[in-house]
Length: 131
Image 1 (cartoon, rainbow, N blue to C red):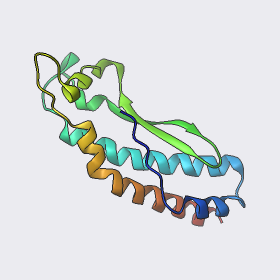
Image 2: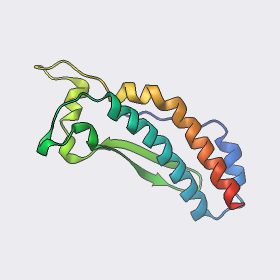
Image 3: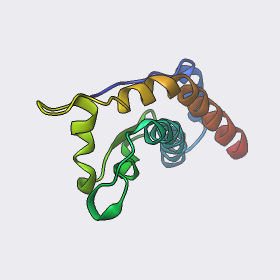
Image 4: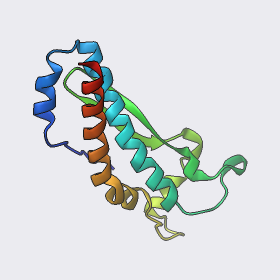
């Protein structure tokens, strides 16, 4: 599942970035994107079915957010699973033997608005602290 969220006002923020170095701008955007993604990861973990997976770890612990790409104008955070928690995909979509137990999509839907706000506030906060 790939879902893209566009932050309104990004153009205005990009104009303020012009006074900052490309490296600093990229770091600010990446940090903000990761902060927003972490909100969604926490929501997914709360909604994940409870049970024990490999080695006694709960499968929801396998969800993670990381930066996929970053530049002075754009940063992309992705949410995925650690390799050991691959079976959580089957819980999300179901199998022929088990009904689906959606948690990733509902977790995203629940927090996407707050994640956008978090991204905006982190960008604003970081710009103000650097200027």
